[in-house]
Image 1 (cartoon, rainbow, N blue to C red):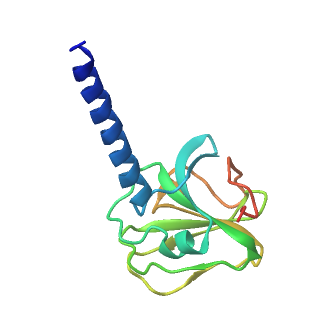
Image 2 (cartoon, helix red, strand yellow):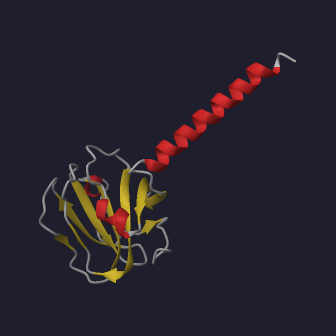
Length: 156
Protein backbone atom coordinates (compact mmCIF):
# COMPACT_ATOMS: atom_id res chain seq x y z
CA UNK A 1 0.00 0.00 0.00
CA UNK A 2 2.94 2.40 0.49
CA UNK A 3 3.72 2.32 -3.25
CA UNK A 4 0.74 4.54 -4.16
CA UNK A 5 2.10 7.64 -2.36
CA UNK A 6 5.00 8.40 -4.75
CA UNK A 7 2.71 7.86 -7.74
CA UNK A 8 0.08 10.16 -6.22
CA UNK A 9 2.64 12.93 -5.62
CA UNK A 10 4.09 12.60 -9.12
CA UNK A 11 0.60 12.87 -10.62
CA UNK A 12 -0.11 15.90 -8.43
CA UNK A 13 3.13 17.65 -9.46
CA UNK A 14 2.64 16.95 -13.19
CA UNK A 15 -0.96 18.18 -13.02
CA UNK A 16 0.06 21.33 -11.12
CA UNK A 17 2.93 22.10 -13.52
CA UNK A 18 0.66 21.52 -16.52
CA UNK A 19 -2.01 23.86 -15.15
CA UNK A 20 0.57 26.51 -14.29
CA UNK A 21 1.96 26.49 -17.82
CA UNK A 22 -1.52 26.75 -19.33
CA UNK A 23 -2.17 29.88 -17.28
CA UNK A 24 1.16 31.40 -18.40
CA UNK A 25 0.37 30.85 -22.08
CA UNK A 26 -3.24 32.03 -21.77
CA UNK A 27 -2.14 35.24 -20.04
CA UNK A 28 0.67 35.94 -22.50
CA UNK A 29 0.04 38.93 -24.76
CA UNK A 30 1.27 36.77 -27.65
CA UNK A 31 -1.17 33.88 -27.13
CA UNK A 32 -2.81 34.25 -30.53
CA UNK A 33 -3.95 31.57 -32.96
CA UNK A 34 -1.34 30.73 -35.60
CA UNK A 35 -1.93 29.70 -39.22
CA UNK A 36 0.55 28.30 -41.72
CA UNK A 37 0.50 30.37 -44.88
CA UNK A 38 2.04 29.36 -48.19
CA UNK A 39 3.40 32.11 -50.40
CA UNK A 40 5.04 31.08 -53.67
CA UNK A 41 6.24 27.81 -52.10
CA UNK A 42 7.43 29.47 -48.86
CA UNK A 43 5.83 28.57 -45.52
CA UNK A 44 5.10 31.29 -42.96
CA UNK A 45 3.78 30.89 -39.42
CA UNK A 46 1.48 33.88 -38.92
CA UNK A 47 -0.27 34.92 -35.74
CA UNK A 48 -3.88 35.88 -36.43
CA UNK A 49 -5.10 39.34 -35.41
CA UNK A 50 -8.84 39.39 -36.08
CA UNK A 51 -10.34 41.33 -33.18
CA UNK A 52 -10.14 45.07 -32.50
CA UNK A 53 -7.89 44.37 -29.49
CA UNK A 54 -5.40 42.10 -31.28
CA UNK A 55 -5.36 44.36 -34.33
CA UNK A 56 -4.64 47.44 -32.19
CA UNK A 57 -1.67 45.83 -30.43
CA UNK A 58 -0.30 43.92 -33.45
CA UNK A 59 3.46 43.39 -33.14
CA UNK A 60 3.98 46.23 -30.65
CA UNK A 61 6.76 45.92 -28.06
CA UNK A 62 8.45 42.95 -29.71
CA UNK A 63 12.17 43.23 -30.29
CA UNK A 64 12.54 40.51 -32.94
CA UNK A 65 10.63 37.98 -34.99
CA UNK A 66 11.70 34.66 -36.48
CA UNK A 67 12.54 34.72 -40.20
CA UNK A 68 9.44 32.88 -41.41
CA UNK A 69 7.03 34.32 -38.85
CA UNK A 70 4.62 37.19 -39.05
CA UNK A 71 1.14 38.45 -38.32
CA UNK A 72 -1.96 38.32 -40.51
CA UNK A 73 -4.65 40.94 -39.88
CA UNK A 74 -8.18 39.98 -40.94
CA UNK A 75 -10.47 42.96 -41.48
CA UNK A 76 -14.21 42.79 -40.79
CA UNK A 77 -14.91 44.18 -44.27
CA UNK A 78 -12.96 45.30 -47.32
CA UNK A 79 -11.42 48.74 -46.85
CA UNK A 80 -8.55 51.05 -47.49
CA UNK A 81 -6.06 49.81 -44.90
CA UNK A 82 -3.73 51.95 -42.83
CA UNK A 83 -1.02 50.94 -40.36
CA UNK A 84 1.56 52.75 -38.29
CA UNK A 85 4.53 51.51 -36.30
CA UNK A 86 3.89 53.00 -32.86
CA UNK A 87 5.81 50.94 -30.28
CA UNK A 88 6.86 48.47 -33.00
CA UNK A 89 10.62 47.88 -32.94
CA UNK A 90 10.93 45.49 -35.89
CA UNK A 91 11.39 46.80 -39.46
CA UNK A 92 8.51 45.27 -41.40
CA UNK A 93 7.01 44.90 -44.84
CA UNK A 94 3.24 45.09 -45.00
CA UNK A 95 1.51 43.22 -47.82
CA UNK A 96 -2.07 44.25 -48.43
CA UNK A 97 -4.19 41.39 -49.78
CA UNK A 98 -7.63 41.18 -51.39
CA UNK A 99 -10.36 38.81 -50.18
CA UNK A 100 -9.06 36.04 -52.50
CA UNK A 101 -5.61 36.25 -50.90
CA UNK A 102 -3.78 37.95 -53.78
CA UNK A 103 -1.05 40.41 -52.86
CA UNK A 104 -2.18 43.84 -54.04
CA UNK A 105 0.65 45.99 -52.61
CA UNK A 106 3.77 45.68 -50.47
CA UNK A 107 5.01 48.61 -48.39
CA UNK A 108 8.04 48.99 -46.07
CA UNK A 109 7.40 50.17 -42.52
CA UNK A 110 10.14 51.57 -40.30
CA UNK A 111 10.39 50.92 -36.55
CA UNK A 112 8.58 53.46 -34.35
CA UNK A 113 7.42 55.53 -37.36
CA UNK A 114 3.99 57.00 -36.65
CA UNK A 115 3.33 58.04 -40.25
CA UNK A 116 0.53 55.99 -41.77
CA UNK A 117 1.32 53.24 -44.29
CA UNK A 118 -1.86 53.49 -46.35
CA UNK A 119 -3.01 51.07 -49.04
CA UNK A 120 -3.74 52.48 -52.47
CA UNK A 121 -6.65 50.05 -52.86
CA UNK A 122 -9.96 50.39 -51.05
CA UNK A 123 -10.64 46.63 -51.36
CA UNK A 124 -8.18 45.23 -48.80
CA UNK A 125 -9.32 42.25 -46.72
CA UNK A 126 -6.01 41.22 -45.10
CA UNK A 127 -2.67 42.72 -44.16
CA UNK A 128 0.37 40.49 -43.70
CA UNK A 129 3.34 41.81 -41.73
CA UNK A 130 6.69 40.06 -42.18
CA UNK A 131 10.30 41.05 -41.54
CA UNK A 132 11.45 43.78 -43.90
CA UNK A 133 12.94 42.32 -47.07
CA UNK A 134 11.17 38.95 -46.73
CA UNK A 135 9.00 39.46 -49.85
CA UNK A 136 11.78 40.98 -52.00
CA UNK A 137 14.28 38.27 -51.04
CA UNK A 138 11.86 35.65 -52.39
CA UNK A 139 10.77 37.54 -55.50
CA UNK A 140 7.22 37.97 -54.22
CA UNK A 141 5.36 40.80 -55.95
CA UNK A 142 1.78 42.02 -56.36
CA UNK A 143 -0.39 39.32 -57.88
CA UNK A 144 1.18 36.50 -55.83
CA UNK A 145 -1.39 34.21 -54.19
CA UNK A 146 -1.28 33.59 -50.43
CA UNK A 147 -2.77 30.23 -49.38
CA UNK A 148 -4.00 29.12 -45.96
CA UNK A 149 -5.56 32.43 -44.89
CA UNK A 150 -8.08 32.54 -42.03
CA UNK A 151 -11.71 33.03 -43.11
CA UNK A 152 -12.85 36.41 -44.39
CA UNK A 153 -14.70 38.09 -42.87
CA UNK A 154 -13.58 36.83 -39.44
CA UNK A 155 -16.00 35.07 -37.12
CA UNK A 156 -16.78 37.34 -34.19
